[in-house]
Picture 1 (tube, rainbow, N blue to C red):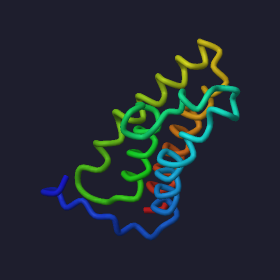
Picture 2 (cartoon, rainbow, N blue to C red; picture 1 turned 90 degrees about the horizontal axis):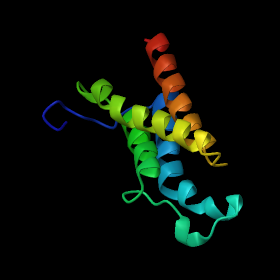
Picture 3 (cartoon, rainbow, N blue to C red; picture 1 turned 180 degrees about the vertical axis):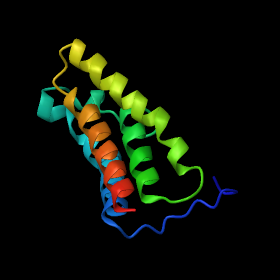
Amino acid sequence: AARGGLAFDRRDIAGRLGLLIAVVGLVVYPLLPPLFGRPWASAEVFGIAPDPTAIAALGVLLAASGGFVPLLFAIPLLWLLLSGLTLHAMGDPQAWLPLLAAATIFAALTLRRIAR
């Protein structure tokens, strides 16, 4: 990414939304267990659990620009889609969050493409 000129210079709405999504993955996601009746020990934290890590990574990518950035969206987006569908099939009440994050990123990417 450094060789391709990765930069965090986006000042459009998608770039700001990307930073907000990164904050959700870093700060908000670990605070959710009590809202769903779970103990604090089950909190999912960035860097350890895959869902908040994928959400934060997608937020950072949305705020970035560079040659390889579009290619880097695929794996975290697919992860959130599969994770959300798996959690939904298991009846987990937190299944909506990975799906919402993936849908939000996809919508932001679509709006960015339309704006060009």
